[in-house]
Image 1 (cartoon, rainbow, N blue to C red):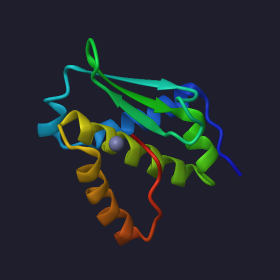
Image 2: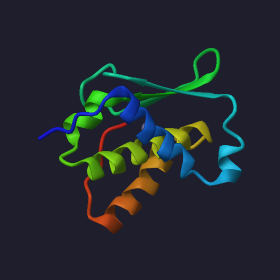
Image 3: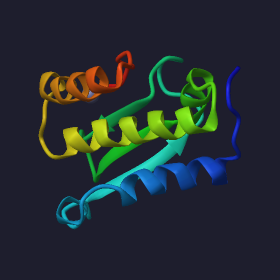
Image 4: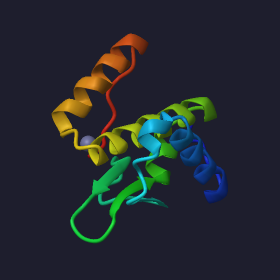
Length: 117
Ligand SMILES: [Zn+2]
């Protein structure tokens, strides 16, 4: 049931998600690296925001997204949600604040919450 994409195709979904972020926020995202990897520290983890050392970094885990998605449309939605979640952390929102925004959005769409950190 999972959807499989090449890394290039998946990167394009991530780029599309970033492109949907309003310009006034995107303009403030210079000190941020976004990278795509196959898997994160656990197989159900979709993304991670890291600011420990060096540039701030968002890591997006391709295979975890693909495992979760039944269609390419759904994959695109999950990628967008993950990117926005992690960008929320970049802008200083904590987990509770990001989840509050997501819960509201997901309730509107009748969707379950997915796991990110
Ligand atoms: Zn988070």
